[in-house]
Image (tube, rainbow, N blue to C red; front, side, top):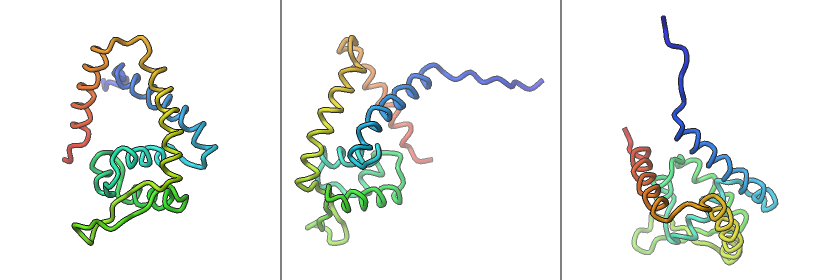
Amino acid sequence: MIETTIEIPQHLIYFYNLIKNYESTFGKNSKSLGMNTNEILILLEIYNREGLNQIDITKRYLITEANISQTTKKLMEKDLIEKKMDPENNSKNLLYLTEKGQNLCGELLVLFRDWNNKVIKGIPMENLILFGETLEMINENCLKRD
């Protein structure tokens, strides 16, 4: 007889719920900004690491180059980011926030901080540190290219 039931590991359910809550929280707010959650993610990544390029983002996230290209194009059309030629490599464009992008990131950071405080409420710092280290290892495993 073939086994027909699959038990989903509890940690995957927890990850799913966390992601859905994140998408729900930012989805509600992103609609009023005319953005989607991927655009917010990339905008905040550029805020945190100005001067990176699209390849840097694809290496950090499981997002295709085509998706990054499309998203950065949309962010440029909204005057939130701009591309500047890398002075050390003329074939590379680096991503920077515009003034409008910097202002929007200020608002997004408040929203993100509030959401983060909600989801980690009551969790001791040592647990969060261990959780972060564990997630980093899981992330590295996910990003390994087979």
